Amino acid sequence: MKGDFDAGRFSRILAREAPDAVIYADREGVIRFWNGGAERIFGWSEKEVKGTLLDCIIPENLRARHRAGFEEMMRSGKTRYGAGEVLAVPALSRGGKRISVEFTILPFRDEEGHMEGIAAILRDVTKRFEETKALRRELAKRGG
Image 1 (cartoon, rainbow, N blue to C red):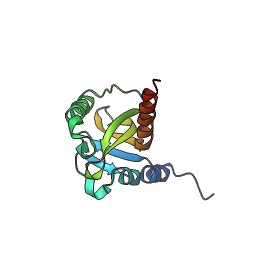
Image 2 (tube, helix red, strand yellow):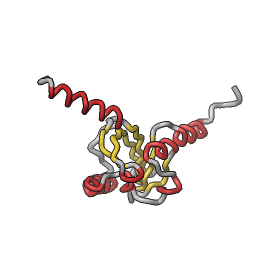
Image 3 (cartoon, rainbow, N blue to C red):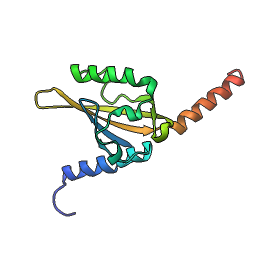
């Protein structure tokens, strides 16, 4: 092994190359980081979405609710979701295709503790979600 462990390099490679989507949005909801996993899951390159609002991945009927919750979290510094809690929601991929994602969030604060943005790690669970729905329908047909 060459030299000491480089935690900064490790973190950069992990965030950029992770198979799950890693997205960072500033306090205005503007995308500032979009990794290769996000490109694969959502279909847009980092160049296409960097500098745009998170709205591009949020279904239109959920945008107002998301925006209100996001703004409240940025204002108060508090979230309804505990550390490590996995959230499951619909999302949009390129072309408006609706997918199902599970994700966790990580608030970013400045030195004074004020919110400066949020990172999310997201996984596409569309296939599992569809399989579960199909199983439930089959059980309902059988009276289960």
